[in-house]
Image 1 (cartoon, rainbow, N blue to C red):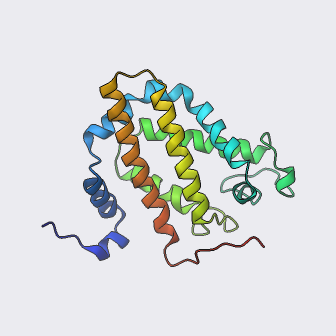
Image 2 (image 1 turned 30 degrees about the horizontal axis):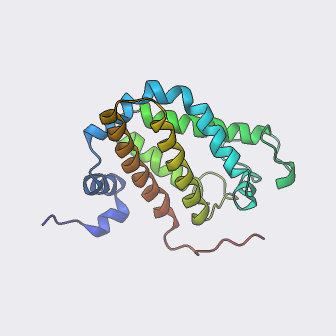
Length: 198
């Protein structure tokens, strides 16, 4: 039986990621499948981003989180949710970030830098990093990750890969998104489960 230092899982990001990756079975073959998908997935990243933002804009519980200043955004803020249109500069800024995120998943080496980036993606949706005014409830992050997972699955199924490559790619992204989900939810520990609208 493998001994795991459970305290270290909470204090050592690399150890945590390594444990989860090993437990889930995310390894070099999965990373290769993700990287091999880059030439086909890269061109459809803009449509994936559009689909995500179309979904986010359909619910006040998700769209309201784009009214406060986003980390790194210097432009004019929308006065309220009603004024937040898809062509607003802050939404365009966020869409670029999501596009870069998806591109990094399929192009970057899976090393310490990427693990730290994936962890920051989780942290930046809380007041712990980025904007102190940005506090996205965990339920909304779960909704988003579920939608992204399904959208990626549908996209991969539409790439026309041979069956073996399709299965490898789907399984690799499935594992990766579970790893990402952990690096989101860990930043919600010891926090209230509800974030009421003020």
